[in-house]
Image (cartoon, rainbow, N blue to C red; front, side, top):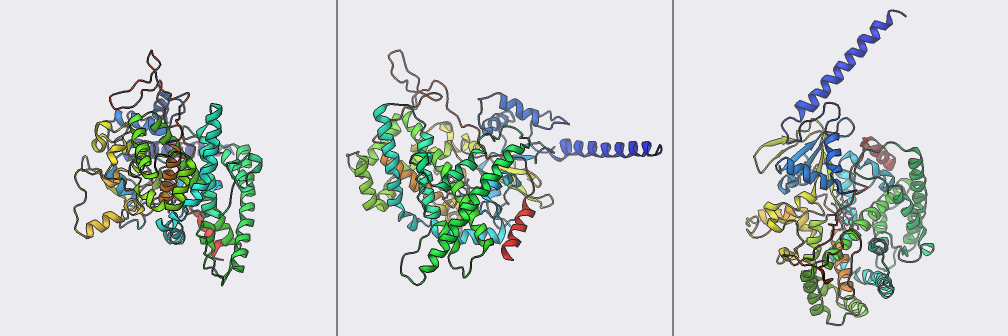
Length: 573
Ligand code: HEM
């Protein structure tokens, strides 16, 4: 026994020496060629640096704001690294649209662009292992093919009456609030509206999300309960395992799954009885999941539930955030408000009664929506300044995934790092957007309001290349510099729906109501009580409104690929 002491000591010394050498190598050799803040602490890596930049504020600001400052400190490189290993994967923060494009496009190594990052694992309770958002390869491709018809532009136009009808509830709420003059949370009402739309599009269900809570659909209540367990998860620090939260999350996740399971079976049985009938088939995500299947079993039902949860998750908050920012930016940019109102007057007539607008959209929506050029520019500019989502990718060690920095011509191997395309920085690049890069200036998009899926998937570029067309007309912003829906094959499947929703809602609302922001971001007034306008025609604010921390951006990672594989095996058994 006494001889064991020196042995244990020797082993411990060896292990510590190994860890020390590995850490030193990682900290000071592996990432040595990358732009990175210095000094990097041997023990903490960049954790202290991140903490310091987050502390600089603003309070609860999105981590993108800290990344912007870090990049400035580094002289605005195309990308830089953050070393949080071994707490989390090291990260490459991608700040240039050209490098972002190299990550999101198809390559010889990655047929469907660089795979998604394992950091999505924290969302599993919300979206499930089989989710289209995190799956890869042929499995993902088959899902995308299945759901594409539900998001084809011609089909989406048939949803116009539905969107218009759901907007009626929102208008009624605003009418009531305008009468009483009370302060309210725009987020609350807009999210109700986007939930109502997504419920119908995803599973032909009326959530009643804009009714009193007691009258809302139970699926929605369960989903909201589950979402609430993420409320305190921010991207601003590391979270420690909280068994109470985990147990609550898993309880709500189970309850929701049970509810969705029943709904899927119900739909399946209903559609079986409709076989042979000439009734027009629904193109909801739920219907598309079941179409063409001879037999449905438990595994298929589970997989379908995961897609339903994913579409609910991806399709409500994003559009709501877009609209909140659009109303805010319009409220402080009188020039833009006048221009959008005048376009709507021309298209809908000067009668601003939302009922008239709704009727016109119901009867002639396709034509009208296509002509809303300035409105589209407002949407495009809002998404440029305030992108509500993002992507994180991961190339496994040993893959040899290399990008070229367009500024310096240097090549970087990005294996083993989480690649975060920081849209916030890419979209505010002065080299692309000039002196007004940080300003709300919809006019920059006039003549270039295209936000179509073909352009964002990169298919339009390919077609141009094949036709020998010149890549970009000199005056046009490069397509890859605007990427709120991300680009390449994994771009957002719901982008055309979001665009149509936003256009309809803006058309019904902007001429009828004036929004006044209270609290952070409210207008500054001169001594006569008038708002102060700056040189760019925007009202000055007392304190700048900023993007707050987003609960879904970064999380401690776990490798969920094995679990995903298991789930799929179960699927095929
Ligand atoms: C303004 C609104 C929206 C924005 C800014 C947005 C943004 C994005 C982004 C950036 C991605 C790529 C995520 C990644 O690479 O990890 C994405 C993917 C996705 N989005 Fe959206 N989205 C919006 C609305 C919607 C809507 C309305 C739906 C559903 C109806 C939706 C469904 C999806 C799905 C299912 C994916 C995964 C696609 C795939 O991997 O094939 N999104 N979205």
